[in-house]
Length: 318
Image (tube, rainbow, N blue to C red; front, side, top):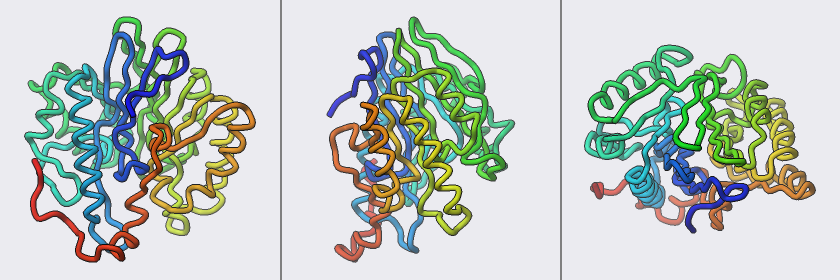
């Protein structure tokens, strides 16, 4: 399925890399009459259950990388909300988790306008280093690299408005801060809200609702960390905050951390009913595309049970 229209069609979107599509990420292709862009053009795999990724996960990663590169060739702008590897492509070689390399990164960033989070504040030490290295790599390669925190940019009739840094999860998170992005074209508005983990921070929800979007793409809470730093009360708080979102926004796409657990349908069930009762829709990125979700990381043990020898490929296709 191709791009999905938002509102009256002044914005069209296509998910490129999400957990419901088999990889870690929130990469989104956005197109307006004036602009094509890729939001958070990264994807990767992660450790789970003491097992390296299954062959099916590498196939999904290869597919996501191809989709991102193809969309980026047409795009003028790339955005980076924060410096976790599932949200941007680093410029070093790693085929086990990232399938990254300097040539792939050069192909992605060359000639683009890169709007990214300020790595000098609101970041962990590791993210600060990653942001510095990304900017250094893009210097002289990208058309321009600009800090986006709290700023607005206009491309013809399309306005991009970045939030001030908001917590990666709830206030006081040790995971640093991220940027949300509002894309407005004509009377249509889309908000991309990565890694807010169910909008546990009040400023995150406030930023979204004040813009009156027709569509929000939001990172859900990490059910898979229940009992490991994330309590049941926190997960219930996230669900109630998401309930406020689906009451007011016609289309809400919830994905990312949420789909690293196979019990995500039960968690979303009351929210789906809330949305439907108001004539709204709540779905995953895969469902937005008319596909069944494939949370491959959450199914890794099952996949190895079916194909015990299907681990990392002996070579990469790049």
